[in-house]
Image 1 (tube, one colour):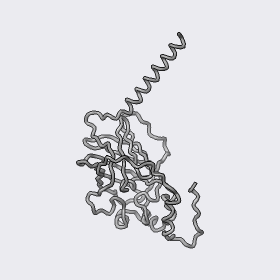
Image 2: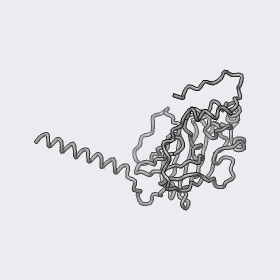
Image 3: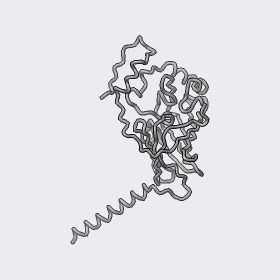
Image 4: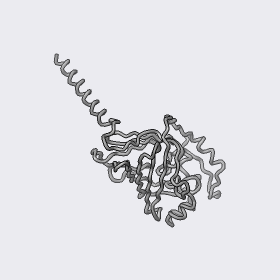
Length: 256
């Protein structure tokens, strides 16, 4: 009898715990919360002509980068870019990639799953008791918190690691520092998701980067996993010329 009672208590406790988890992770949005969930593919800059959208170009770098930022661009060698070791794209760079993203709104968080590079970001919604990471911890995709304002999901990200391709890759290589701060505003625009971005970095930017992107909704599931193959990623190095041919050849060590 005593064993049976213990089993019943354990079962009840487990059921209670499972109920708690389900409630915490509920996908039913409270009244008044804008629905930005869904899968969205491709991107369209608004307006189409921009020197920072979907990625900073040479004109944008000349206009916005500090002297130290321009010096880094001039000195950085494309052969050192992390993408050749299958390092995932950072943000805001990944926002401009033409691959799909899935957004899931939960009670206490919003999860962004990007087709490109298998990147998953968690945005911790304010007011749910989440503790920020301890001082000194930095993250490639930052630490992101979110809140709802009117018809928008507002995401603020800080605590980034240094990124040699933080604001642009592919030849330009415009960096971002640990002082980078991003504010993303997501809302519905017809059947599309609209992202209004403001990016700041007092180390490498003279002023903020501001742009708007629309992502059409799609019913197609994400094509996952991405499964980046280092050997394939490094094929482009065959046509990339080093700025420093006098240096010893680079033997990449991250293929295993």
